[in-house]
Amino acid sequence: MQIRIMHIVDSLGVGGLENGLVNLIERLDPSQFQHIVCSVRGLGPMADRLPADRVRIIDMGKTDGAFPIQIGALARRIREVKPHIVHSRNWGAVEAVVAGRWTRSCALVHSEHGIDVSAVQSEPARRNWFRRLAFELADRVFSVSNQLRELYSRRTGFPAKKIDVIYNGVDSERFAPDASARERVRQELGIAADEFCIGAVGRLDPIKDYRTLLNAAEKVAEFRERWQVLVLGEGPEQPQLQEWVDSRPKLKAHVRFLGRTTRVSQILNAFDAYVLSSISEGISNSLLEAMATGLPVVASATGGNPEVAVDGESGMLFPVGDSGRLAELLMTLSRESALRHRLGQNALLRVREQFSMESMIRNYHGLYCSLAQQRAA
Figure 1 (cartoon, rainbow, N blue to C red):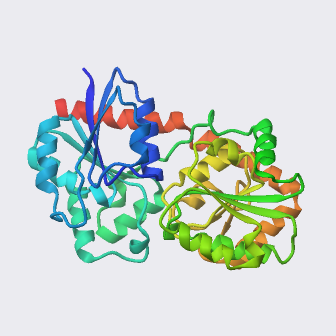
Figure 2 (spheres, helix red, strand yellow):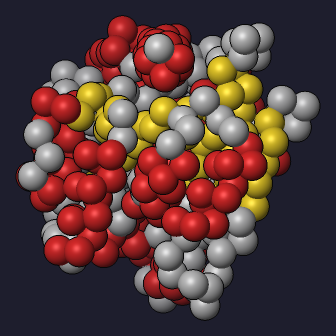
C-alpha cells in the first residue's frame, strides 16, 4: 500500500523550503509514496518542477483580503484527499495541524525551515501561543537545524527534546566541481582569468541582506582592480539593489544581477568565492550547493550557517551585517589561492559526509513510514 502524504506549504515560489520539497518528492520511492501538494497562497515557479505524473497540486489561492483563518478550508481539503499523513511546513501552513487534528483522520508532522525577517528578533505572543498549540497537536515536530530547534523551543516553551532535526541535503552529482564548466562560463560572462569573482545565489529579499555584500564589495574595490560580483536570483528587492549599484561608480562596472537561471550548478563553478550574507537562515540550500561545488564560502554567523560551515575549517564566518569584516575575509581569499583551495576541499568533504541528499531522503523515509505504521496501529 502506498503512503499518501499531503504536503501543505504557504506557496510554491522560489526558496529553499520549496526546493527541498521538490527534491524530496523527486527522490522518494514512487511505489511507496503518493504526494499531494497543497499551496495556501498560490503557485509559483517551483510548481513546474513537480513531476506532473506523480503529484497532485492543490491551489487554495488565498489572497491578503481573504478570511484570515484557513482551518476550516484546510480541513475540507484534508477530508477530500484522505491522506495518511499531513506534513505542514513553517508558519504559513501551521493551521494545517489544527485542521488535521480536527478531522481525526491522519498522522500529523510539522516542520520549521527558517524564519521571516520580521520575526528575527521576536514574534507576537499570540503567534508563539498558536505555534505551541500546533506543536502539541502534531505527532512529530522537527526543524532543519539545531539553532532553529532551540529558538522555537525558547519562544514557545515546547521542550527542545521533542523537536527532531533533519538536515537539508544537497545533490552532489548535480553540484560538483567542474573545470570545463568554469572555463566555459567565465568565457561566456567575460570574466578574465585574473579576475576575482565573488558570487551569491538566492532570492533578492531583505532577509538575505545583499546590502552588506555590496558594501563589502565597495571596500574591496579600494584595494583590488580586477574583481566582479555576480548575483543569481530575483525578488522584490532587485530594483532597489540595481538602482543602488548604479549610483555607485565603484560598483557599477563590477556588479551584475543575472536573474533567475536554470544553470546555477554551472555558474557556481565560475566563482572564486561564495558569499551568504543573510540576517537569518535555517539550513541554506544555496550554501550547501556552493560547498558541494568545492567553493570557499563566507557566511554570516546566523541560524544554521555555523552548523554547515565550520569557521576556519570548511568556511569563514562573519557577524551579521558586518560589511567591514566581510570585506577583510574576501580580501584575504583574493590574495591566498592556497587558502581558497583548502577551504573549498574541506567544504566539499563536509557536505558529502554530513549533508548528503541520500541521508536526507533516508531520514524522511523513516519518518513517514514510522508515522504511517503508528497511525495504522
